Amino acid sequence: GVSSKSLVAAWVQALASNLQTKHLFSFVVRTLFRRSHMLRRCLISIEYLRISLNVPVEIVIATDVEEAVVNTQVSQLREDFPNLTFVVACGNSAGQYPYSRVRNLVAGLKATTGTRVCIIDDDDYYAPQAVSSFAQACEFGTEELVVFGSQIVYEKWITASVKHHMTITGYGTRFDAKHWAGTLRGSNSIPLCGLIHPGWFVRQVVQEYVYDFDLSEDFAFHLRCFAHPKRPPIRVIDDICAYQSHRANDDNVSNTQDRTGWVAEVGNGLFQLLIEDGRTFDVISEAQEQTNRKVAALEADVIRANRAREDAVRSLAGLIEWRSSQSRSTPPSNPTHCLPAPSRRSATQLAKAVLKRALGRA
Image (cartoon, rainbow, N blue to C red):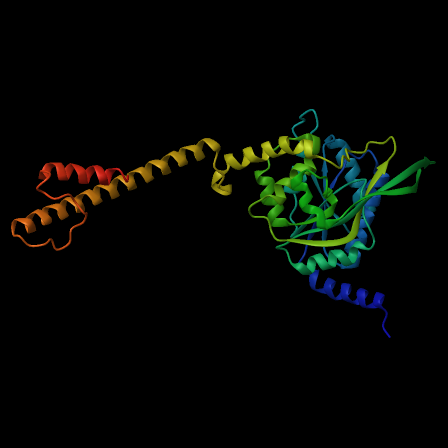
């Protein structure tokens, strides 16, 4: 019989034949070229995906370093990876200091052209088994945001004679895709490398993205995407597709699991953006909401006053008809209210009583 492994391989190949012209992947690789050996490992993992899926791929190098350094490094990368298309996006092209991780991220995303966009730091990499998950993600189409599993891997690197040797010392937190909504509650649930974005959506988000919370630009970016009113449907793939490298005494970024203390600041910045772009997000400020409530209360008062006036007019009409019928010694055709006998009150007193009674209900 045919093995399950052969069936999976055949399925991936069949998908790949349909994807070749339909899905251009843009991988935003964020780097400062300080760890070239890890950058190359990251690119090798992307090259493996490209070959296995047989899809066109572009690599957007998102960086902040000086132009001369970028040109030298990217020229070497083009020689080492001739089948990959490299695009340079410098988030610090104006020489702004200090460097900004937000500008770095946004510049890279704006430079993408793919129908699918992935983001990854240069020390992280895609697992070999990610091939089937990427093929499955492509099967969903370009209108869905895909979240997959990832995990921290603890590594020890030793450099000797210009060669780099790596040993895995253990595995850390596993980020399950099904917990993506935890981001909205302040949990560091999904790393940047744990998503595949529809290109049209991510480029729309970054056009609106002027937030500069550099402490956790990836966390803020995920909040922005997950809470966006035009967010595509989310698909979840629980398989581990990417690994985050952590090294002792190295330049690892913050990996705080609980970020509830950051949500207020991040959320305030995002909410301010929503208010400023009310035409898109239809968000009403508290002051405007108070004004709306006052207007609604006034409108209700007017409605009640109009109803009271109508009741008074009907009551007076009934009174006049009743008085006329009394003068003819015939019963009224349709008296509106049960009023005291005219022998005890004058017509003026009766009219006042009717008005007072009607207005009392307003």
